[in-house]
Length: 303
Image (cartoon, rainbow, N blue to C red; front, side, top):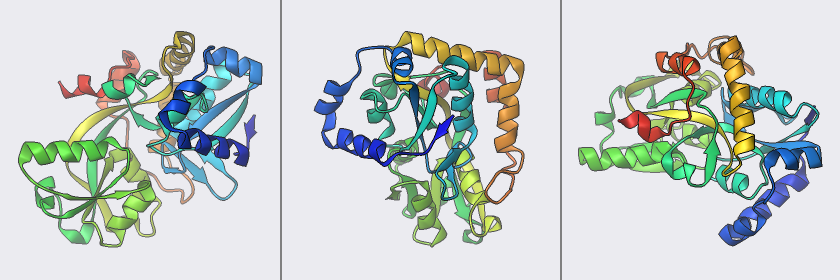
């Protein structure tokens, strides 16, 4: 079922981005995603290279794994069982444009569902609720966001963590020297190397990066949460048939208990490549969502 990432596909994605919003508008498909998949015989999944345990590349063989990758695979096997799966590595900043112009059929990375993004793409039912917190070096002595005033703080370009840091600056009348990494590994390296005093990101992603670092015991997730965020799969806006199919498949996984098993596999059991556990049991908020699924945006969580 799985096909290796194709260079031509990656090139097409870069070209699509290079032409900007005009090209995006011109290339937006007019037909439904399900029809497109059935006609082409394939479905293109947007995945991340360095966002464990949600979506990441394993080894040099371009094999993509993770909680959201597996959910995508299970859903697609259910709704388009004969389609071949193609995987495209994407980033937080180019996922939405590539979904909009039809290069991606579904985004399987850890993307926050908020009202601004809902104007551009559609989100499936929420499948994870994260808390945006900070990782620090244990020997730094930093345990509170208040200690970061005037210090270097790393965050990844295009993530909501950047927005939340700026919001807190305004609310608390403080200033951070925010250093932006192009991806989560670069952002972590800023903190690991001592250039930044803390790295701010979703707790699940922080746990995955720390677990797979050179010295996991040297870092900790600490401090109060900047906010809670609903994380979901995403796809083209104004395609109700595809959203209905994806949501119904997810509901079946939730009701059968399979989604909880997949969660345990990636957040509680030992995961590759170092066979370490993140020790992140399912939160009460996510357990409730499995009983009462919804696709509410971030703003609903802030009320």
